[in-house]
Length: 477
Picture (tube, rainbow, N blue to C red):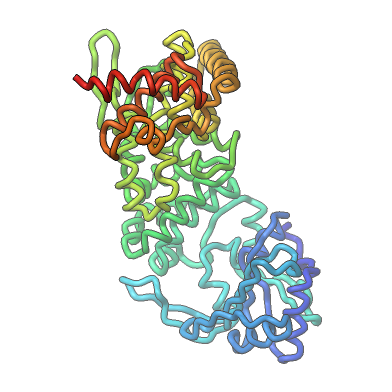
């Protein structure tokens, strides 16, 4: 890779960029993530183009060539962005951004730079990491020729995260970059240069000037990486986790009984997240894995003859979620899902302890609903013991629960349960006005179904309601 001097420029969009550059008599280069990903053989959906000239004017000419008018202009930074999402002719590229080659300077209390026109090397030097500071010409005379003044290709070869300039300055200019360094290490499986790692530790407090939305975006990208524990360990070791997600940092060093978990809650949690990452790309199930034991530090107590206990950590953890979602600006449409799985993550094991009765299984299916498969996946991921016999035993127990759930589900249809007799029918049959009594009758029907007294069918539920009407409505005392 490091000896490669050219990048293949075959994508129709880049060919078109080169054509506009030649007609405009300017030099243009594709830079950053697209070049990095091409050299690594990875897919890239966004393209950044540096123009040695007026980047905004260039973007307008390019949009005109494509017959598109949706150019978003940022005059202060000399940049323009063309959104291509939904355009079937762009072969996977969703966004292309044009920028006038520039150099930047920052004030201490802001991420927004002062900008002036610069050279290509000026523009590459302002970028976060050497692996993102490689450019490739798109004009015919130097088509695909790589410009790499900071050794980015060699760092790609070594698997190294390094900054073009002094890392202290790089992180001072834009503190979000210290989280991005960790994110790239997690996504690419790269190592962070020791000097860069030390600068992250020294400059981490600068994250205070970065918006919560951008911090959370980087955090969730780390969570979505192939092995999230790589990034989270780096966040912990550098002290960044304490600033970004203090509740996760609090789990480190919290000892628990060495039964089917690691003894340290933080290390156990990272293993659970990695286990889920191997099973599923569902980002929010990974988030649940990260927070499922988040209340253990708050509920830790020592019980003689037993050891450390964490009674209620499932319920308290679920109640903590709303505050965490608010602080981290997480999407509230995912809150109910996360709360439910955190609240229920101990239930399948409790069902095993109850010798897998139909009633216990019905209640588990009823409470988990459509999330039952994700819950069972979480439970299996939650077994992190290094004792293979113990792991095998717990996995067999979950196999028993899963088999029983399938049998009960086929018979009782409790997934996404809806009461077979609704509130309006209860009011009509019992001649009731809306009120607590309607809810009480509805709950009695649900309990009868869950206990196996009646099947999950309308006629059986209605017959049961008529019996209960005499006891609850006609003779309430």
